[in-house]
Length: 502
Image (cartoon, rainbow, N blue to C red; front, side):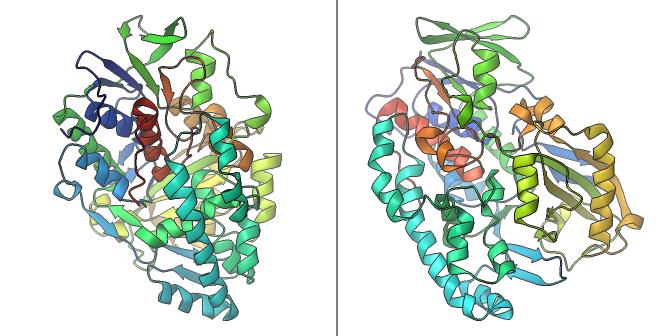
């Protein structure tokens, strides 16, 4: 184990991490590398949090994240213990990154190389080729400050936030992603294609701060990858790494309360009454769930006005007894409306007659996800969270039928006659299975007033040894965000700046 710090934990210090999603796993590994004895508690029966794996009738489905960017963040977790990720996992680069299918029947491939992407753009609008290069340059500037200098910094101090205002103003981060993209690109469909990135982290591009355009350069700088065997394989290998390092993993562990004395977290109490002592506690779930249910005497210090939650997710899983070789690994199926649809989902929170979809076809890269001659799919459909008045017992089957019909009429011909092993998740499942507030897919929205210092802090303001990681905390949702939140906690614990790696 690498000795990276002057003030490492003593062998007697015990850290409890609640929640074994990617944020909790990354935190457990970083704490172990600091010398803590670590117990990782997970309410579900498997590691991974939302990155569960479903097996149905010979088909495999990654239930959670499927897009891997910033792969160095996972390299770092193995390097903490002088191991190499490539000895255990195979990250395969994808090209195209995403294939867009627009409602007029046109198709756009967002390609791995800049020149191939420019060729695609010129088919729609030759003038937007230069605009794309300018957008990419602006995205790099945002990345150089936003990712390299801010993402891994703790924002527990308002002064630290104030110090960054000049840089944020220079990068025009008071604009929304849509406004920034629209400044450089003019064709409406190309604008849509390069505005969708906030949706990958739970944000409406018409409301999300333009700092999230750094995602575009993050993809361009590092690529978009698929882990052979899926994110379930990635979780499994991280689990083995934790076991090799002596981390105590407790599954089916339902935490009922974080016990505090004199503004210190001293233990956690399980639903069965068992109490485990701790020197520090890290909560890796939705922060508001912790404040409301696990800290009964500690008020949530984040005013309600600042808590706008992300959209919900309807996720449809199925297999097909037919091959669809012309469908990309990642497809974005765009409906006829864009801004109006997102307003209905995020603001009025009502079900719309139309929709846009993300379609995952892992069998494009890894044939093990389905029987021979078959394909594995999942479709992610943004929907209102549970703050909307939607009867999902009724709407779930209806939405399934509408999605199958729309895909059959466009990119998956004959789908209704070859589909099998169909099931789905709704925002109600996210609330029940993952204790997600309002069944939101990505915790709170990534608006400017809910970013950095304005987001849930990574350390409790009063309980000094209680920390938070995951989608609701700084820096935010998505795999790079939640894995990076573990680095923020490490810096809070040690006072030593943890590099971005990128």
